[in-house]
Image (cartoon, rainbow, N blue to C red; front, top):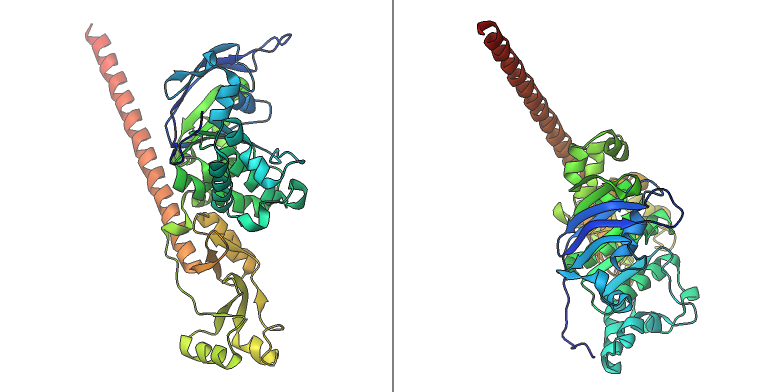
Length: 415
């Protein structure tokens, strides 16, 4: 049956009830009686040590691994009783190293599930272009390429586009960014945050990286062995009040700095900065420098992407040649990046500011060190107040316990 062209599926609730997986010959279950409710439209991240069962739990949701006990409900429908192939067409799935079919073009990979579910050809063509644009890839440039002609980051973007192509309410992601370099990984995380901001899917994401979990998750499930839930809460609650020593081990040192992953660049002041392009005449550049009140400009390329930081002295020493002048922009952040990303970029660039870019890399503004340090101080002060409040609660509890013990002693003496 064809999907209507206007169909837009938002998130769906997911309920796991006593979910269990036993493998033949194994004395203990791989996953043991896991119960959890995931709200429609939220991103839940499973994090835990290797072999704890987090990927097994994820794969049971779309029955890539069949459960041996328990129930899974998506929007109230018990999926343990329906055809697993039909279920997998309704649930997007993205894995490490993208999992693209090498003999298919980018467009064919993305079109796979819509074609299998009977969408009309015109709607499929439109959807492929729509999805490429959504993940920040130019349809004209990437439509006919094969996976081997893409970088690792581009392959992962296509993998996400394929998982979302049939507009499923649920997206399962099994360490999808684990095989790419750290810079590409940061950009892919930002892209996923932006997509979720627009699409409101229900995302279940598996990672072993707690910093990634903090950055992406609305809630985090910290899992022990056999997927026993050590703590299931918001990133902020886990950072400020870990349930036990096992969870504290995942949080690690520097909880206040980790909380920089909870604030997005779009939530702080993005300042304007004097810019010129590679086509701006040199005399005009000197004029803008004189009129800007600063000693530096940001040079943009012809697609308005940050290219070089230009100082007056650089231009003078390079005898007015833009080719030889300035310092290349090594790192940028998007509005969906975190303040930790921005702080790392500022410290790496060692220049006190980082350029903020849009979905196609175009210049938007600048975040500077002063803004970032103010945010760090606010987080540290919030942590100090939380610690004082926690200490006060402990003292009150001890006082009440002492008072109760004294009353008990007095009652015994009277008796």
